[in-house]
Length: 322
Image 1 (cartoon, one colour):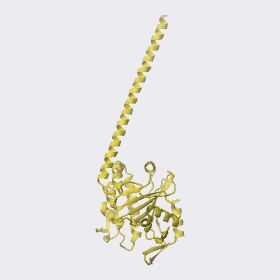
Image 2 (tube, rainbow, N blue to C red; image 1 turned 30 degrees about the horizontal axis):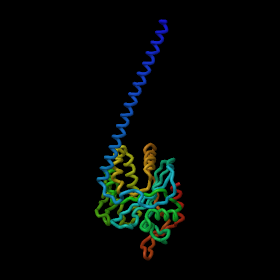
Image 3 (cartoon, one colour; image 1 turned 135 degrees about the vertical axis):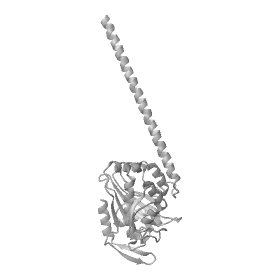
Image 4 (cartoon, rainbow, N blue to C red; image 1 turned 90 degrees about the horizontal axis):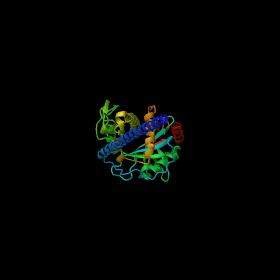
């Protein structure tokens, strides 16, 4: 009888211990959950505040994304092409594209690639005959540019991003507040509203924009494209620095009003994650037309153009992207 009572007492004590242990676990779980919720709310508040700060500094023309109809090929998250168009409308409704690029992403190689297409390339524009490549944007926006590139070079793009150059200076200063170091080959002044002296120097905002847009020398657009690719590579390196990532919400707030894109937010997140966790190689670049595949001509009613060997450049582009 005594032994039986002792056993019952032990079972009760054991049961109470288990209950107290469960209660302690529940309390710890509730505390962890509360801590996590506080972190999420704080992070959300930080992101919102930083984004609004960025918006306050911007005065871009694009009020919302996806303003253009676009029928690019369906994309997965493993590989995609994005059409990048730089414009300087200056109030014009149908401006020509000042910069035409294709950004290529491949998850397996994690190798960023960018192709610059010379805007004076003389090509067939669907429904409009032969003209300069950059006029495709004026005739029919990103969709007609996509069709033109596909018809002439055999490569389709999945998404587009139209960038208003008015925001370049602010974006560059947000990504690289200490500036971007470049070597100015000679004095630059014509057509950029400033004078850049030759030599190695660190450029900010407007001066950096002047550097990438200057084209009034013997290299013309060829030199400009080379400088654009150089600066994009350096800004990309800066954007992936830890100190810059902390400013990502503000940066997006600055960029957003100057960019119209149909890239889904989920895609941005996945690509960004892959770049951060992967061993990021240097940016690879290509310029079309490739060397030795074009000649300078003047067409009545159109002006100076680049008459290009379409087949050679088509093969060069497809080989580079693949």
